[in-house]
Image (cartoon, rainbow, N blue to C red):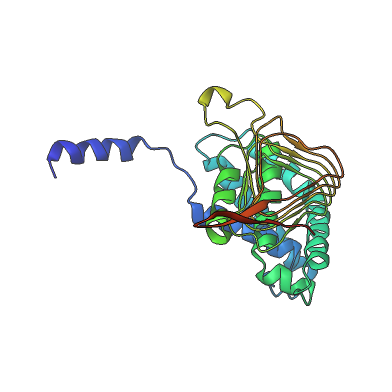
Length: 274
């Protein structure tokens, strides 16, 4: 390499602001998950005082992450305090999510199995933590938490998406939930579902680009629902591999229709219904 190139890299390294590593950020998120749900990764404590000390250590970790965040999160002390005050709410939401996944999957034998092994639980837990930080106007750190959970589970949930209570992800791999998506309560989503935008224009960055999914909706595997004006009405079912760019009213069932063909042309139509 030329010396001029090395000097340019040296200059960039010198000027680059300090920032927490992705491994430090996800370690904190995992610590919060195991704090709320010991079945995820139980720690051993000899006394309540030791447990309190562990919680204080997590608070210090978050404060340091916020202080070193290159986007300079607003008032690290205040954000840390408000985040830990929100933990009971996050816990309650996640407990309902666990209950939803247990009720929604006949293969699940216990809630411990879900907490310890289900990618859906991990992705939603990471989302609930990241969403809380995003609500507190923290930049970058929530996105890093969500993207690391995405890398681990294959489930991509933007931290600024709005997701209601009792949320069930079954299997999960390949799910994409965009930034301005609104999801109501008691919604179930299978693998490969995309809740995305109709365009990638930068000018639309501040607009609602992703769909709204109302309460008690089921989205089966491979369904693709696009657009900020697209609403799936409550108590609707969207079948596998359906492609939707317009709204459907409440209590609607939308199914994919497949055609069989041979050398003589179309021979049959297959309709998939529940």
